[in-house]
Amino acid sequence: MTEKILVAPSILSGDFAEMGEAVRKLEEWGGDYVHCDVMDGMYVTNITFGMPMIAALRKRTALPLDVHLMITEPERYVEKFIEAGADIVTFHPEASKNPAEVLKTIRAKGVKAGIVFNPDVDIEKYAELFPLCDMITVMTVYAGRGGQSLIPWCIDRIKLVKDILSEKGLDIPVEADGGIGESNANLVKEAGATVLVAGNSVYKSSDPKKTVASLKA
Ligand code: DX5
Ligand code: ZN
Image (cartoon, rainbow, N blue to C red; front, side, top):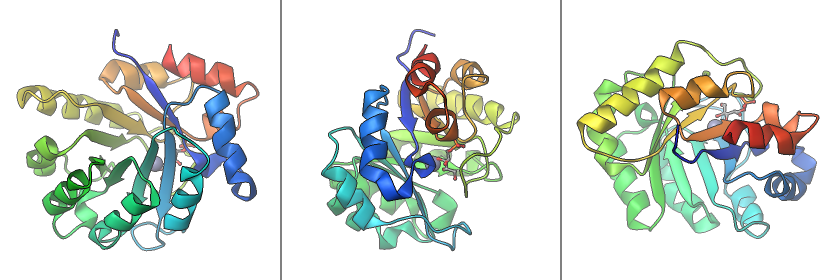
């Protein structure tokens, strides 16, 4: 493992009354991206936050805002999230009527674009979208809430994405999201993920700085 590992703490596990502080802390702990989980109560049951939160966080940090849209028809909102200050916008392709167009729209605005695969989504069906992506995210839990346990068979899906990328001659990062902590980070790294989302394992750690360092090691 020679590739640099980036850690993207999910502010979903932070204190919602202290979001500025949640971002300040993750900077102090060595986080690389601020992972922002947007849920709309339709694509997933939960509702979290929208563009105003992204705009508010934008004023608090220079770190890239990695905005994970768990929303139905993301085409309705991607431009608004970019205007709010997102640096990376990812969405679930099966939630969109035209994922290729959404990826192109995001990139045309100079922002990084990516798709996210829930455990029950056929990755190969969307492989033709990979050349339009700057990052591919593999969920290691079912999207919808923080603090779940990693699903072991999703590790093979990271390998599948890596295989498809190498077949296509594409060198773009793979992000893994859900249930990742010090005890299983090696599995996702060995499978080829280089961006690790971590919510509870970082925010609920007794020593978050050490946890972030260990996830990167
Ligand atoms: C799940 C979210 C994840 C999650 C990560 O729907 O996409 O980003 O909050 O949190 P942990 O690491 O606690 O699973
Ligand atoms: Zn996420």
